[in-house]
Length: 162
Image (cartoon, rainbow, N blue to C red; front, top):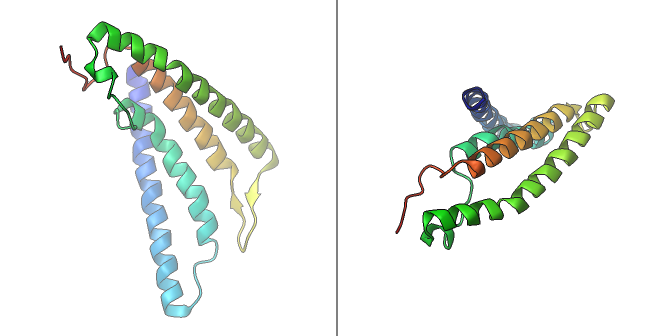
């Protein structure tokens, strides 16, 4: 499962990069049009909002598997290995509960949004439901990765200090 999960996360990580590049392109075109014509790109703000959510959501699992999420090891890094493992596992209870609640809430919203074909109304109609689905997928992947890395004997990059 780990190899398949890594491949999915790598694909989504690349897709997140493409989405962020598209977001940058929309922003540049919008600013250029505003400068030259006084009018921006229709729907640029609405599409940017949706694309930003998609870009972040797609990178959540990969960020956790690559250990690039914010971590504070002030106390735990100074402990012996066995104590550090206990602190890591006990300390993982709250994030797992929070991630579970985020996954439940975003999954429920994704289902409702998809069934209703939720749109962002403005000068153009922007579908919101794909972002909601991808956000739920992102929370699912980060939850799986978090559990996998927390239950592993020792995360990469953490060395024995004693």
